[in-house]
Image 1 (cartoon, rainbow, N blue to C red):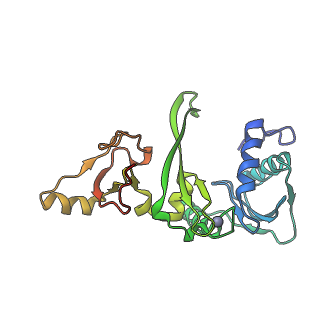
Image 2 (cartoon, rainbow, N blue to C red):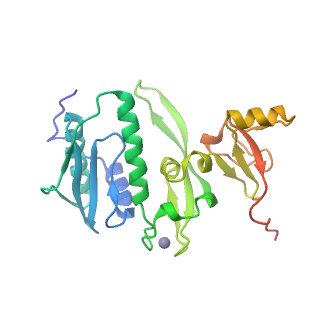
Length: 244
Ligand SMILES: [Zn+2]
């Protein structure tokens, strides 16, 4: 474990901007728990987060120090009260991954609409729209760079009609595999990914799946990366086609 000079570590402008945007989107009463960090915060008021859970691990403590600096740089107050729950780290990697996933699913159930506090879990999640944001070059740990496509999953609040862009991983946590692995083109045709047993049934019945590349076979629109290379079938349109 690297013992960096924690006192000298400072968040860069980009992460401060990110923190401002991300932390303001969490409703009061909501929870922020960055993946793999071992630390969980509770949003106590519009400008205050309180430490809620901390894993008893040196990395978690280091994350907490850095995130506190980042939150403070983004104009939030960070409280460390007496009510902090200290959690024992899991003993093996599989256990850790399961725990982390369950924890993140629990977190997802607490997310709420930033307009009216209606829980995101109760949105009509099957009606999402995938939006391509940008191409981004990311630096890999071996020093190489790789181009990745950044996408957002747009969902609409059934109560206040606010459109909310969620990170695809967050949408996946909220909605589960079945809904995540679907995609709808602009003509309202829905493509649904097939698992192995569905694929076997289709092929045994004489059908053939469509294999998805990075563009829609009907409209040539971009398809989000999590659907690439997946076998799909077309589902009937839910909404009638709108024609001008
Ligand atoms: Zn709302």
